[in-house]
Amino acid sequence: MKLVASKNTWSPDEVYEVTGILLREHPRIQAIYCISDVIAIGAMKYLADRNIAHIKLAGFDGIPEARKALEQGQMVATVDQQPMEQGYKSVKAAIDLLAGKAIPQRVEIDTVLLIQANGE
Image (cartoon, rainbow, N blue to C red):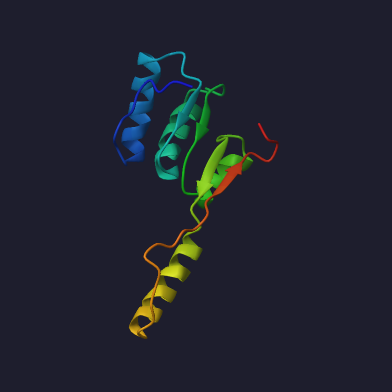
């Protein structure tokens, strides 16, 4: 795997345009990894609008739209950061701190890799 380009934007509409630019500049791209699922949705829309199915698309966050895209074969992977667990542990730490209890300097929460059901 070789990184051929990296663009910094958080707008799905901008990602749509950037995806087109990247594919014109690097027509042999086989996969796109996006730093968030919201960004991946912009790339996914570009690929879908042009019936480009050979490029593997992955995101990060595990949002409902990405999970649906996995089910429909539009994405191959996303990473669930477990926001409910993050919230729970954050509130618990705040309550403990307010109660005068010691809290850890660092709390780790596992991420979960979500892939297409058929393993492709």
